[in-house]
Image (cartoon, rainbow, N blue to C red; front, side, top):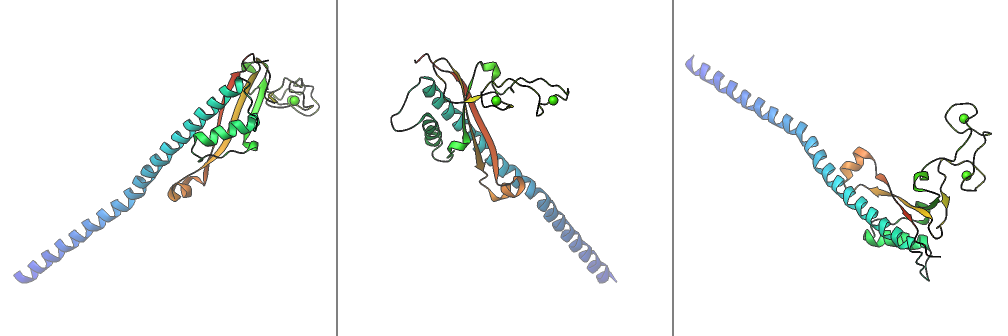
Length: 194
Ligand SMILES: [Ca+2]
Ligand SMILES: [Ca+2]
């Protein structure tokens, strides 16, 4: 009888140990994805901060050169801006001409503003047929009155580059999709170079 009780107690202890091991494994299985998400998330976040601030610095440098009216013999202003962005991001960001806007405005406060229109039906939006002031002269209403071009002496010019940054870790790609869309812009007043 004594031997039987001892055996039962031993079996209970063994089961308890197994339960504890199981619980530890379960905790690990719950905590691991959270830990990995945080780790990879931090890594990706740091990369995005690094890349976006590099593009910001590059577009700032390019806009300052543009504001001087400096002309290179073998490249246009757009090509110069795209080259500087690519050089100053170590080739990690390669925007093309369609990713770059160089827009001229009458004043800094006009940047990003729509062309004025008469809201005849009072819905707060421009609708076809409502009259408008064609500030950028392209014969249509625009939600941004900027006029494409480099601007002359004293013009206010916005440089804006859009790019997609692909996430590095497959884990984050699964969570957030392949890439992150980013846009960087700087507005400058051209120097009186004419
Ligand atoms: Ca309307
Ligand atoms: Ca227009």
